[in-house]
Length: 485
Image (cartoon, rainbow, N blue to C red; front, side):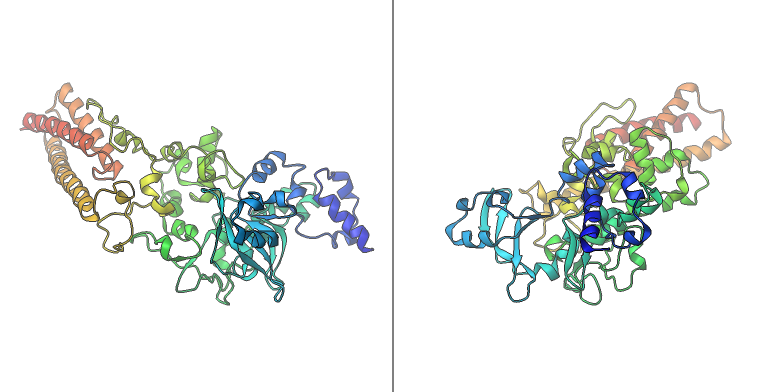
């Protein structure tokens, strides 16, 4: 077969109008000359909706060629005079911010000394000196040949997450020939990271991206991968001290989300409704209102449980609005908004107008952990969660208020729990001691106390409301205790 004919087949594969009949007609010998990675254009014909979403995403625009001056975010004349010559060298725009061009000596792409500030909508000088081909390219492109430092497709294409598409296409859409998984490893191949101890090298041989991974594999099975582990008991890693990336995958791997399925997998009491909040597939089914099936293949709460990798109208490519997403499983919203307990006057928290993520994902930490102002490992110069908004308070002041809330809550809650134990023991001796009214009071008190224990914030979500709930429960339990005596 001549090269021209092989190239023509490649063109057919990457065109949006590829037909199954044309594919079926390709002899086996010719298939071997078709590249394993076909490019995202080949997916458009059958997966129009997903392709359209992806096409508008940051993934698709991670590396954009500069062919004409109009491809730049602003006209070159808008740049300071000393940066205009640099901009004219640009071959690609990376992440909508950086510009790269080949180095004449090494033929590697390097960062140019100019960036585009998206917020300011202006060109600015940059002193970041990196050889992009060796420091960055593997995670910003698809089908990276690390040895040759060449990529198959600029940007994060379909095959970066679904694996090579040739056999899927030649198999007329055979689903067994393509990867469709909710495993976090797919995201972790790029959204992992390291601290200064490894110099941002993700492989033991010094490579700064994961080598040898394909979707469907486990990152833990690859030799030479060196992710810096995150201790879930400590304050989330400081992004200012983290090499290159926030280590979102590393933080997720240490989080409760990563172990959500473990908590019910071996439980005798876990019903179908549990999988709706403890697995990525179950949460998706719950949100779509469809029946659960195939629980044995489910994944825990992984990245795609919350983020749509194709794209989304919501911030951060979330599958729904942040608060709706959290509230689908985390029911503490009733305490924050002050409307959870029966017979207790509604009393919204001062924080009720904020989304969960504003406190539980400070600095985008994927441990979903509040950075406490009194954390013993918190660096002096680093902001805690409270200080990101309460800039008029010192860490010491914020810590004192938080500690006071939680100490007062704990003292009162301990008393209520003691009362419940005392009442339960007494009712074993006198099962008929309570009339209908007192039975109702005891049932309501138990339910309201349960609301606060499940809230787990020890008053921090809504201190005033929590105290009101406990005051009412305390009065009702006292009435019950008097009747039993």
